[in-house]
Length: 451
Ligand SMILES: Cc1cc2nc3c(=O)[nH]c(=O)nc-3n(C[C@H](O)[C@H](O)[C@H](O)COP(=O)(O)OP(=O)(O)OC[C@H]3O[C@@H](n4cnc5c(N)ncnc54)[C@H](O)[C@@H]3O)c2cc1C
Image (cartoon, rainbow, N blue to C red):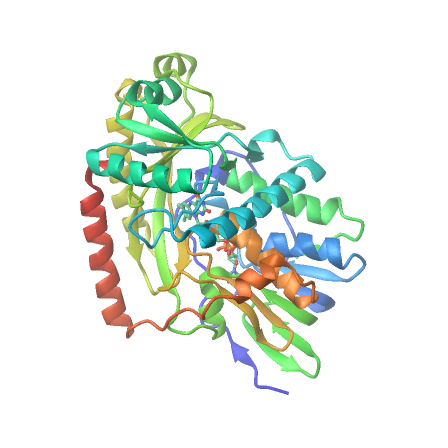
């Protein structure tokens, strides 16, 4: 029997995510209480955790499966991201978006596997169409530097024989209503999620539509864990859960469990969502009912128009901070809301009367060498963490992969995820924070008008 290990930090989400708020009240799942015994315990109700639970239903139908979430499904990072589920290379830690050709081809096929998994769940669980829709995305260039990024990206995509269409300023304006973009690239392979709706619907499907439904517990953070014989004992405030195997799907909080210490970079980014646009505003805006723009410069603003439950709204994401504490306060969110407001007004002068209704921040986990924190970290405990900012696809793959590894399914996902080095060690915290903050500020400054 090993010692009881305390989990040093619990997640903290700052600001109300508009994606979740516009959906209205979510189904509630009970808090874990008493003694619970399961074959599988999934910790974390984001993309990785919910995908792991779904894959367990497929591979281990009949096993007892539980998932615990510290907060509520849809409130964490999985319900507060911009919802771009991207198939193409999109390397956030680099200067551009693409890497080596063979590596890129493999990543594209795996990312498409994640997209197919999400689309399959959407069909099986009869999700509303806005939860998962393949409408593609535009990579928009605001300045010359952005255009140069897009030109280099287009060359790489041509070499990979990946479909892409160059868009002129006029075409960008026609599709989106804003004329800020000098040009763009249309990339048809992106799947767009209403992220909070998707994770809510995943939870509804897993608990209500599977032959052997899984048990989901909310407001049930794992606070300690220990190995007892062949099992794991995981403690939450009101329960003791004994599990044969554990899938740890908590992204950067793997470090709070004592794993990958000083190897994970905790980064935040921030977003705002407008109030619903009225009929006259929609007419003034023009463009397609739904679209998504990623910035040609990775440090620029991501902009979406979403139409569905809660009406038609515009969502802007920009700004990055490095926060090893894994927590930010509302003052920060309010400060960056001003950047969102500026980015919104510059792009949509015709929507002068429209205000930002929701603003929030959210955690990401990156590693210095852009690798996942994946694998059997202790006997019977599997990590599906560190999605390097691309968790809609990578988190989905990590969750699937952790289950396939645990069930000894010899899959290409497992092979890929096990092929990486471990995340590189970071310099001591104050130096890492200073270095990362300066790098982020410099890159944001260089991105200039793209923000
Ligand atoms: C504003 C913003 C925009 C983004 N845009 C995109 C985008 O367009 N595309 C993209 O691919 N990615 C995007 N991301 C990143 C994406 O949200 C993350 O990479 C993704 O959520 C990671 O998925 P995950 O399941 O690994 O972790 P998470 O979604 O973080 O889920 C982990 C869950 O574990 C829970 N947890 C943690 N500790 C415990 C504990 N002790 N006990 C129980 N539960 C615990 C947390 O509450 C959390 O719900 C964005 C992020 C932000 C913040």
